[in-house]
Each structure stands twice: as structure tokens, then as C-alpha cells.
Length: 150
Image 1 (cartoon, rainbow, N blue to C red):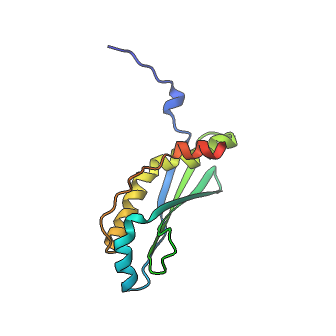
Image 2 (tube, helix red, strand yellow):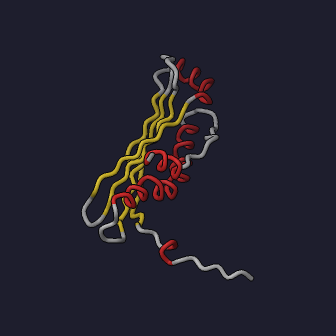
Image 3 (spheres, rainbow, N blue to C red):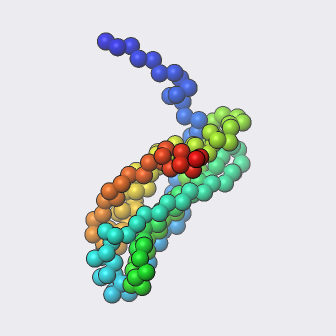
């Protein structure tokens, strides 16, 4: 038997997820012709993600994760899908370094909420009448964060 010890620091999250909710949700299908064309082209649509945060009182931070799924081409007959997902976290430690806070917002929290957010977003697209989708590439928030630093 191998005795593995993980330091307490690694096990303890530096934040607590207080709440999350859908702040805004949009499915835009201009007309039936756009719907038909979008259904045929939806596999060519691309995902965009944007993350913003703002400080609240009592060591809390509101984080808005925005997903957009849209046609990258100049096609005039297209549909657009967008969700703004709000999360409020409470920072557990006093005076955390700005880089650590940034990593919490851009990586740790996103890794925690993204599976649920993706499921909601794909469900909305399907319920809007589009084919069942799966995003082929999983978002690697660590990699995106490290690219941002370089």
C-alpha cells in the first residue's frame, strides 16, 4: 500500500461558490428560412467565450461567463445563441495576490461551473429546434490562462 499525503493547502479552495444563475439568455432566429439554413450549417458555428468580473462587498466577486455560438461566415441568414452565466464567489483568504484571484476567476471557477453551463447551453440550443450538439473540443481554462500570461 502506498501512503500518499496531499498538503492541506492544495486541498483547500481559496473561494466558495455562493450562487450561480442564468443572467441573460438569447436565441435569435430571424425567420424560418434562417432557421432552415442554420440547422444545416450549425456544425460550422464557432464558440466564443468571454469572462468578466467585478468586486462586490464582503470579499465577494461577481463573475459573468458569456458563451456565444455563432456562424463565423458572412451568411445573412443565420442564427445566434448567447448565454450570460453569473456566479458569485466569496474569497476565503484575506489579501490574496491579484494573480491568484485572476486564476480563481479565469480557471478554477470556470473548471467548476463550465460542465453545468455547457449542458444548459446545449440544451437550450436543442430545445430551440436545432440538432443535438456536442462541442468536440473541451475548453482548457488553464491553457487559456497561461496563454493570457504570455
